[in-house]
Structures are given as structure tokens and as C-alpha cells.
Length: 190
DNA sequence: CATGGGATTGACT
DNA sequence: GTCAATCCCATGC
Image 1 (spheres, rainbow, N blue to C red):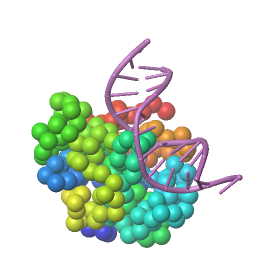
Image 2 (image 1 turned 90 degrees about the horizontal axis):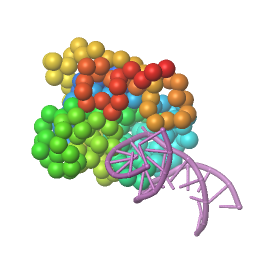
Image 3 (image 1 turned 60 degrees about the vertical axis):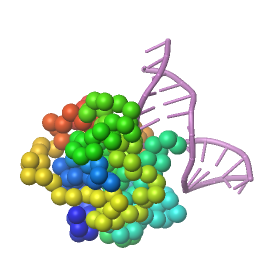
Image 4 (image 1 turned 135 degrees about the horizontal axis):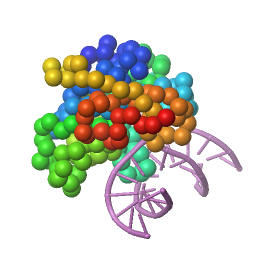
């Protein structure tokens, strides 16, 4: 997808990414859950300003921001908004499409719904690591492409973001409501 | 240079 | 429901 897609308000991009396809080295899946982060709110890594870690977040849109979570997992984000604004969309869950056997062996589980139903799970299933930080999502190695027709009008619900303590009241999480591959149900109670 | 805190997951009570 | 694993990096001395 072109840079202009990402050079927009991060909430719009987060909603529009539902249904798009992530591919890495032969494994792919449809995005069914996202969260938006923006440097104006304290849950965003870019809230602290420009540092070596947040450099990619403040750079050109359409790049991957990959960070290590809890020392164990890698999490994949798409950088949004114009350069100078620190904003990104966290990819939280996929419905597996290609490379499913490789995903099973990487994950060590069988069920389709367990392969990519969480931000740490999907990076493990697709083999995405910290070396992919900063890569161009239009060129790879991690690529995000347009929605298949079947996903053009999939219903999307907004709810509160998961696993954060700051700015927890914002409903900046977006889910494909009919998907069975979400990290948690589409409607978290509030 | 030492410290502390996670945008998580899986195992266990 | 609780909890530990494990590492990057921001912060403070």
C-alpha cells in the first residue's frame, strides 16, 4: 500500500487496515484487529519524544515499527501521519491465509485460531523480528497489501485498547466483529 | 553505569 | 483468577 494511505490520521488508518493482508516470506494473513497510538497520549511509545527507539515512529509513514515486548515477544506496527508526528497502528491479530503449516511449526500449536490471535503470536507465526524495524511496508520484507474483495465491507467495531494502564479510556482498538481469530472479543465491556 | 517498567503469553491454582 | 519469563531502552545518579 502506498505512503499516502498511511499519511493520514492514525485512527482512520487503524480502521482501514482491518481486512488488509500482511505478508512476510511466504506467510500471510488478513488483519482483523488493530490499535492506534499517537504521541499526544501517554500509552504511545512516542510520548517521550524523539529518542533512538522512537526514531522510526517520527519518520516517514508506511514503515514498520517493531519492538520487543516483555523481553520475549516482537510486536508489529505501521507508522502513520506525516514525518514529525509519532503515530502508529499496532497489528494485534490476523486470520491466517498462506504458509499455515510453517506457522504451525513456528508456533507449536495446531488450531487456526491460535496461530495469529495476538500481537506476539502473529510475529512469531510470520517470523517477524526486530531486524524488520524500519522496513518499507510497500517493499518488504514485511508487506501490507490491499483488502481482498470479501473484506471490503466487513463490519468493524471500536473498543478500549488492551493491556495498557495509561489513557485506557480511549476506544482506539478496532476489530472485525465476525472474526474468530481475535486476541479477545470485539466488545470489551466498559 | 544501575535500575525499573512494560502495547504479552502460557502455565498453573 | 495469579504469576513468571526475559530484554530493550529511557531515565537518573
